Image 1: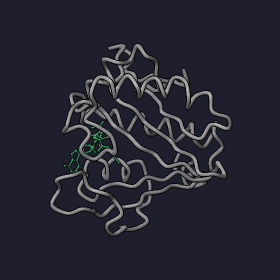
Image 2: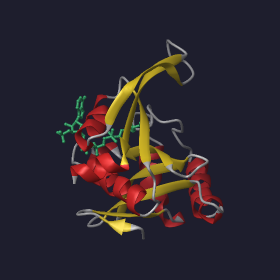
Image 3: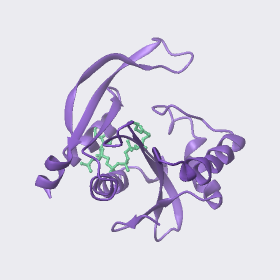
Image 4: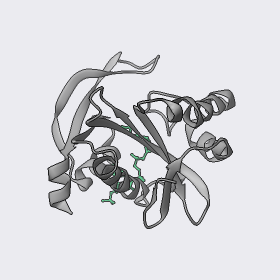
Length: 184
Ligand SMILES: CC(C)(COP(=O)(O)OP(=O)(O)OC[C@H]1O[C@@H](n2cnc3c(N)ncnc32)[C@H](O)[C@@H]1OP(=O)(O)O)[C@@H](O)C(=O)NCCC(=O)NCCS
């Protein structure tokens, strides 16, 4: 386990997390802003295999995919990723929470813990995220956490097949370690 927050365990994924992960990763609505899914059972099994072996054993480690477990339910209700740049001082965040548990403050709580972890334990200098301009819940969470909107990137995101437009705009959000520490 990496660490706990008030209601959550933030830890490495395990093959036993299949049910919890597949519940959100196979849900079309839940993954519409993500680069993956909706997952088949085989996709989810493969994802967990990669998390549990290849990425964890890579040296140096460049990718962290963190399971968000609701401590009372003993169930994985989401995941947060941090992918490091080549200097290992800047990380890009990704987040998904099972929509059955949306609006309960889980992503805010989990991201607060993960950003703390990124600065205190991974020793990053900056974390950032890119968000579809049409994802108001995610934008609100990043603003609530104090990440700074650094601008709108035109047609940076690639739409899923069948969408009206092939590309979509994204906002960039970021926070520096000194800014994060000043807000505590
Ligand atoms: C975006 C997401 C991570 C939010 O997770 P969550 O656990 O529901 O987030 P929280 O409960 O911590 O906070 C959600 C906030 O957004 C607000 N919100 C929800 N829908 C909103 C909307 N349409 N417009 C504005 N704010 C909205 C909520 O009111 C809440 O704010 P509050 O606490 O001030 O009331 C989750 O919905 C999700 O996983 N979505 C699918 C995957 C995704 O889009 N990932 C982002 C890829 S960059």
